Length: 168
Image (cartoon, rainbow, N blue to C red; front, top):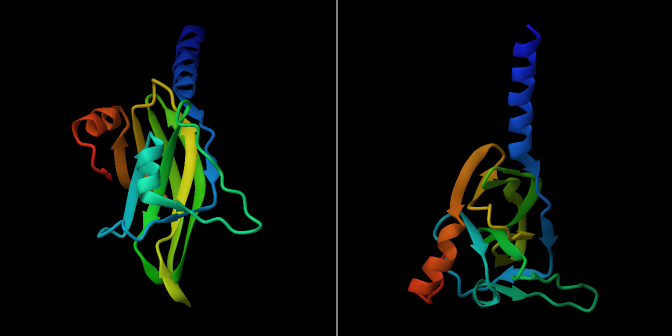
């Protein structure tokens, strides 16, 4: 009947309203500091203050590049880092969306390509997302495989309880 079709349409519209694209601004000009010891092959970060960002990432300033900045009053820093390697590693953002209170960030990770570098480093991808009250969780994916889910709501509580660096 027409009423059933209308009810189905309303349900679909509600689902679409809950899911929306989220704008992530990729950041360039940063590297993972060598003081960060990373045992896992992939570590996911959600950082909400400049002090923590400075503890994890250093600026890679050259003559020609521009260091992107984060406005922590209105943005959160999302980052994904790989273990230190002398092999070529690459992290590519594929898609991002917000579904209700969860932001999903999907990457394609090319790690350990056969080209060997003359030095070792940890590949990193950094991006700024809007800081809004409705975002409670950021989920990081390699393709469709969940790497880690980080609870944004606990970040401030964790930072208040313990002033040492926290990674998720």
